[in-house]
Amino acid sequence: MTPQRAQLLARMGLAPLWRLRQAPDDDAAERAVEAEEASDAAESPVHDMAPDAGAAAPAAAMTLPAVAFDTSVAPMPEPKPAPDADDGSAWERLEREIRDCTACPLHRQRHQAVPGIGDRHPRWLVVGEGPGAEEDRRGEPFVGPAGQLLDAMLAAVGLSRQQGAFIANSVKCRPPGNRTPETDEIASCFPYLRRQVRLLAPRLIVAVGRPAAQALLNQPVRIADVRGRTFEFEGIPVIVTYHPAYLLRNPHDKGKAWEDLCRARALTRAAGP
Image (cartoon, rainbow, N blue to C red; front, side, top):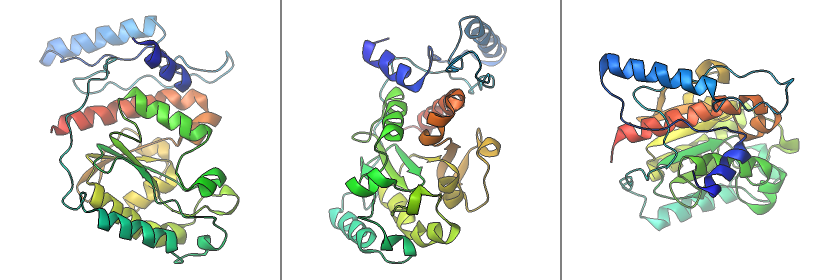
C-alpha cells in the first residue's frame, strides 16, 4: 500500500482494505470467502475504527458477491459519453437556469446557487443534501470537513471530483441555518437534478443522506433500511449511504459507509465498459 493511500484510509478512519480478486466458482468461492472473513476478523479489519474504547462496535462486514476490495485501485474502464454530454451549451443553459432560479423560497437568502462540480463524463454521480454556508459562499458543493471526507472516500476507490465523479445536491440553494431541505423545496429543484442525470449518464448514482435518497427514490427513506440494496433511477443503479457530515459526527458508522463504497465499486465493475 502506498503512503498516499494509507493517509487516505487514515482520514476515513479505516483499517486495512479488503482485496479484489477473482473468486473461484461455487463451493471453492464460498470456502475462500469464509476463510478471508475469519482472517480479517483476527486482524482487526476495516470496521475496527471506533474513536475510543467506549464507542459502539460497528456491524459485521458485508460479503460482496464474488469480489472483495482491491488495494491497488485499478482504473475502471472509461464510460461512454452521454449523447448530450459534449454539448457545452446544454450545460451552460442548465447552470444559468439554476443560478437564476426563483422557483422556491430558498433563493431569497442565498449568496449563489450551487449547481455542482466534477467530471462531465463520470462513472459516479454523488448526490448530497444541499449547500451549507461555505458552499453558498464559494458556489461549490461539499467543501469544508465533510467535503474533505468525501474526497478521501472517492480517492479510496480511485475517483475524484476532477476525474470519474460528479458531485451535486438535491437542492441547489442553501436552506436557512443549514436545516434539512423540505419536501416542496426538493420537488422544486428536482427537475434540475434529473437534467443533470440525463446529461451526465453516469454508470452509478450514490445518494448520500436521506434527502438525496428520497429525491431519487421518490419514497420515504431510513438509511439503515435501504443500505445494501440497489435501486434504479431512469435505468441507472442507485445505492444509498451515509452523508459525510453524519459520519464526522458518528465515526463508528464509517465502516458501514466503506461497505457501501465497496459494493458500489463492484456494481460499477460488473456493468462493464
